[in-house]
Image 1 (cartoon, rainbow, N blue to C red):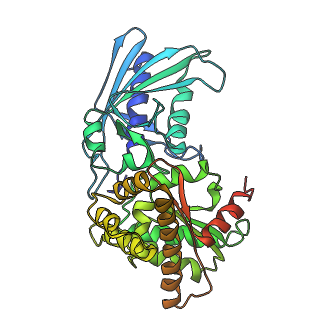
Image 2 (spheres, rainbow, N blue to C red):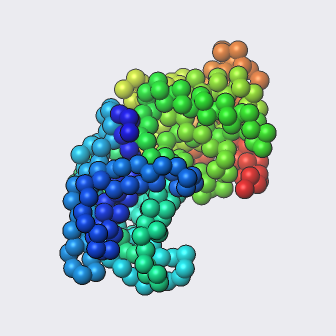
Image 3 (cartoon, rainbow, N blue to C red):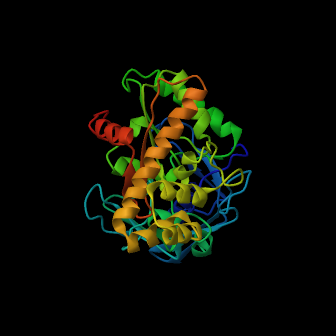
Length: 376
């Protein structure tokens, strides 16, 4: 593999395979072979290193890997990944895999369901099912030592994920959202989407992996989704140049709020200003001085909106709607400045509870239209 490295679910799959190989009586090997594209079974397997694997009992084994995400800043670098595997009775033919969250693994707030993307689950299924004896199921308990502490440095809680790191991603290779190479890859994929007659010029630009995980659950067809990373401005222009006719921006309100302030590269190392944008929109809404001061002094956009909602839920909802409309207006103005006034983007924001928080006028229209599309 190149220096791009692999996302956390790949290392979980590697540790799981190593553990299951021990259950099967196979000798330990310092590398396991993984199929990294579950939808392309003919692709060659990739060797992924593991640190250790051993039987804990006759029917229980542990596999250990260590996350290596490649170059760039990534808080999962060096993170140990423990997967304990044991045989179990399958509840049904298609329910042979049972997953349990150990320490450091993110779960959805209010329960113990792992926060696991569709790709992460498919990765486990395609690499483990072939190792299963007849009439057997498999139980995996995943532990990420230190994952709870690392998660405190992420925006997991903003998306309703608690207790640890989420196992999400849409492909094996890590992607740097601020890396120019990531922009080039997104442009290439954008061109492919624009040329696909099935999509008819429709596109949803999604900000971040959490957005990619959430959008299909809210009814947006997966075929329309394209991850933008932080390069929102250049991708908006590229979409217009490629002939995209209807474009929806779908993202977390604490991120997309930057666009309402004219910030179209959203990496935090380059610019922030989110509370300033929030306070400005609150001024335009006519909120009283005391509320404006509390908004400006909040620790985050989430905290500011939460405190406002506790005092005045109607005002908080109206402010969120104003923000969505402001993002639409600034995005349209950005495109007009770059010679593409024909594309009028829509905006849909979601909140920390993984719920739809607000829609711009155009966003509400596109959300309804895209949800109604059947792309298989």
